[in-house]
Length: 118
Ligand code: 5GP
Image 1 (tube, rainbow, N blue to C red):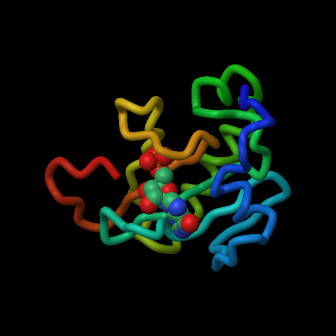
Image 2: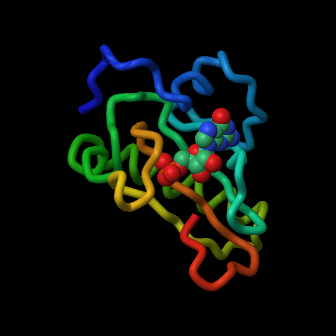
């Protein structure tokens, strides 16, 4: 679980509205917006509003229905933005490229370049 004494993650600051962002989707528990540094023609992020879970392993163990909701939001975004087909990436751990320890899914679509992992 996240140590709440840490400074709020960039995604908590987006959830709270402190960092202005154009939301592409919002449910009671999830928001979605474009990645600031896109690595594919379509590169969106799906983020739970809660900062409770650092990564997808903690989320799957702690709140599987929230994980399912993220997948549903990713799927509906993909219908809108990529024709319905997409790659869903959860970087898990620093050596795997995770930089923000507030669980999030990368939704990648459009003709992906070989080797691009988002
Ligand atoms: P990670 O590397 O943790 O899997 O993914 C973090 C992602 O968040 C990166 O792809 C990065 O470009 C994106 N990101 C970091 N800061 C911001 C921000 O302030 N706004 C947006 N829209 N995306 C951000």
